[in-house]
Each structure stands twice: as C-alpha cells, then as structure tokens.
Length: 421
Image 1 (spheres, helix red, strand yellow):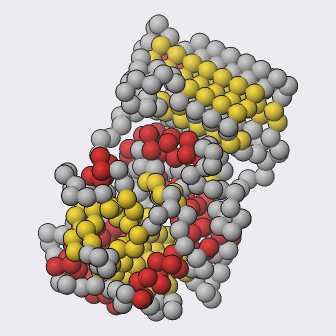
Image 2 (cartoon, helix red, strand yellow):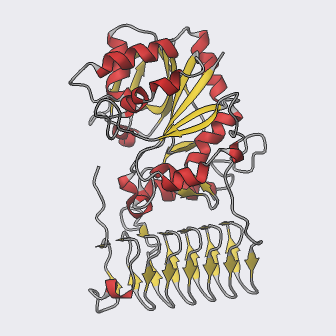
Image 3 (cartoon, one colour):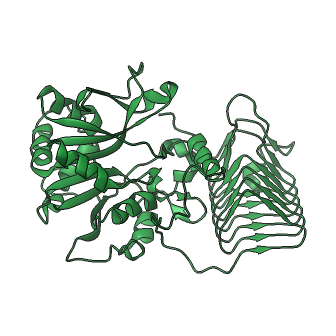
C-alpha cells in the first residue's frame, strides 16, 4: 500500500493578527520550541508515511527555512519519497494563487501522481493534534471507501466554524455542509481526508471544468461525491485536536499544555513531536525567582525576584528582575525589562517590553481579553497596554506618541488592522 501525504500549508491566517503578519500560519511558533506544522509532519513520520508534499503559498520563507530538507523528521530521503515543498507558479495557463484547497492539489497533480500512490492523505498544516494515520487508513480500506473524512465532536456554539458531517449507523456520510450558519449538528470535519488516488484525480479534473466551483474539498468535492452516491465514510477521532486559527484559540491551546495532566502530552516518547531546534544554553533561573506551572525553553533567563506563572517562555526569552508574567506566551528572544508586568498576552519574537511597563490584564471581563504584541516592537518604559489590544510589528517609541497619557486603551489596534473572517 503506497500512501502520499499532501500538507496544505499556504494559510494566511489573518485571524492570528500580528502573529501571521510576516509568516504563514503553519510556521507560527508553538509550545516554546515548535512550529504548528511540526505536529502534522510528526504525525506523518510516526505513522510511517515518508512521502510528503507540502504546498505553500503565503509568505513561505520562514516555513521553507524551518523544514529545509526535512532532516529532523527523517524526511531527507529521495528513494522512498522524502519531503518536497511546492509553491504556486506561472505555467501555460494562468495559475496564480490557489483558488481553493482542491485547486492547490489539482495544480500539483503531477507531483502527487509521482510514485503511483494507492491513497492520498490530504492534511492541514495548521492544526495541533497527535494522530496515527495508519488507523484511519485501515478504516478506509476495510470499508472499501472512495474517500474518508476524519471527524471530531466540537461544541455546538463553535460548529459554524467547521464542515459538519451527518452519518449513518455504519459511519457512511449522508450529508456534508461546509461552515453552516445554523449547524445541524456538531460532528465536525478535521480537514483530514483520505482519497483513493484514481478517485481523487477524477474528481479534481471534473471540478476544474466547473465554472461555478470554489475548488474546495469541503465546499465542492465531498458534497459532489455524495450527490454521485460515492462511498464516503467518517472516521471518528477521540483525541485532542485544535485549530489554533484565532488569537484566543492559540492562547487556549498553550494553556491546555499547562494542565494536570496536559491535554496534549509532549513528553510521550512513543509519539515524538520533531522539530528543528537551535543550539541554546541551558535555562537560567536566578535567586528568588518563582516559576510555577510553566514551560521554559532552552536559553531562557528568569531573573532574580521575577514571577512566571502558567506561561510559556520560548528560547532566549529574558524576564528581567522583579517582573511578573502570568498566563502569557513569550516567543523567541523577547526581552521583558525590570519591573514589567505581562498578563494574558502573546509577545512575538524579539519584542521588548520596557521597564515598569504593563501589558494586558488577567481580569476576566466577558471575552478572554488576550493582548498581542507584534514582532520586533518596543513598548516604551512605563507604558500600559490594555486588554484585547493588537499592537503591530516593528513599532518603536515614536509610534506610541498618540497616547500622551502613556496608556493604550483596551481593545486598541495600533499599527495593525485585524481582518474579520
């Protein structure tokens, strides 16, 4: 049985605000040392799938740099497939940005066909979960399916974000509706699909000829297969899975890691999450520093008198003397200067929070109130940035002059407009 995995990794991820201003969503850092795509890639190799295509699109540079030849995932091979990153290109016909998920695969069908796979596993590069795809492939084969959709139960009030599946008693799919405003149920598609190769190629060619198609697996391909009475099945998944596609979901996924026990076990040596790591010195926690229920990556320094509580510190983060960091995510090489207070905030790479500044608030008022500070931004000393603020990238002291009282009010957007999708 030959299986080829195709990872869709071109997502712009606009709802992640400043975190995706300079990187694709699958390249967003996660859990101190990983990128989001590491989970999908690791699932492949842990499931003994070593023939992997990655389809990139939006700002692929950091993703390309992170994956390179695929050595950390044991994918630096050629005879048995290995990893291949592909981007949109101009060919004989006008082929600019991919029109949809199905169009992305259709444009790269010659590469998918290479090696003559029996099955094609379509995956999203921006979900966080641990799954043995071999179990799903066995289910697909035993049911003589044309296509199989991985499914999971989600809260009904969030079901409109997903493709919703209705199944018969034998788990054959009788209806599939993509992101319905009034969901008829809460059995959601995870964006993980298995197709027989010949079925996939036939459906993609047919979809390409339809002028009114959005060329998307959830909106077009799967519903059309049901109309044609093809054998589509739903495989139920009962593990941890999250689409960290919003600021709140991204923050909550990190908090899930800090539970007792954690929702996602990163210490499971039977299912290692592989990544490409930098060489960094050991963690340094100085005298009288207090670290509670937190993940601290290599090279981080927690200075004397500082408190770090229910937070994630990425490589090279410096927490200065007498700082307070609560329920926050600090990305690589962030510097929190002496006396600063960070609460329910996400601070992107190489940002600086000045002396005695305050960012975010742990106070619960309605929504989570997560504040996000963009990459390479310097919040001036003594400034307060309120809850639910989005602060853009590369901002310096002069960019904050619009706030003479040295306070950025709750909900403010500075140097960045959050797209609403």
